Image (cartoon, rainbow, N blue to C red; front, side):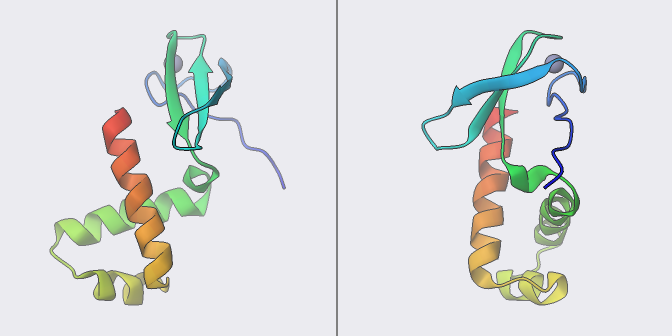
Length: 94
Ligand SMILES: [Zn+2]
């Protein structure tokens, strides 16, 4: 698997980010030497799966039910649960 450069959630730099242990939730933590801040990320944010998170957010803002979101994105209810969990973590760390 190709490892993409991790972009800092705070300043957007890509070349200053290194691993910084794990959070209690089990997610990988990262430290950005560009802005001196840490953030959490999961592999799921990279590539197309990051887009799915944005689509789920957009659909739920439109008032779609979980079933409708699953159907329009072609994912299972279990996957949606996981995505929603990741979205809630992401919103907390921002
Ligand atoms: Zn940064």
